[in-house]
Image 1 (cartoon, helix red, strand yellow):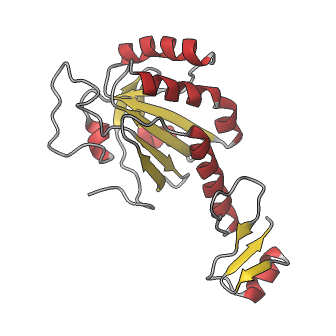
Image 2 (image 1 turned 90 degrees about the vertical axis):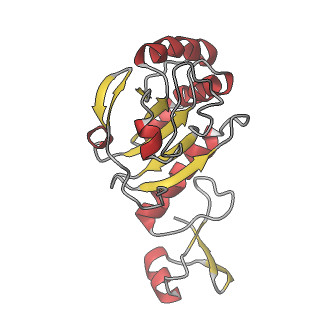
Length: 215
């Protein structure tokens, strides 16, 4: 069964280029982003890992842990990081899970359950292993995005979505289309006008059911 929003993410033990981890212990009650890749030493993924490395200060500012997943081994990950750092001019300080057995890919429904990829597999064989998962401090899945091989992910959007998730979870609001941090947010329809004024102060009623407020 596919992972759904608010499902508790499955636990697993795995090797990484930082050493072995127990995933739920590694989460440590923090926000986390797990992003997966079909194979090391591939061009689009190299640029994506570089973007994540360059955003290290932004993840830290949001108290968010970041971890990669790829279907190659630990030694390949270590060698690949040298290329990543050459391209992005920043240290790739996050761990990468070595998912050679495809255990993590199957647990998180990134491959069919019966998938078997022999040694020598190509990126095309594991093409569906290209997903972003944002996980809350409660170990629940808050958001997932899956991309095709040909389209590089926009990690500015991942960061924006993380900001929205952290804000809406903390303040009990919603965010409108194209929202950016600092802009007005939406009062949920489940909150009455009276309760909205008590909680947020004055708000702008664009429509009876669309009420914007500053937080």
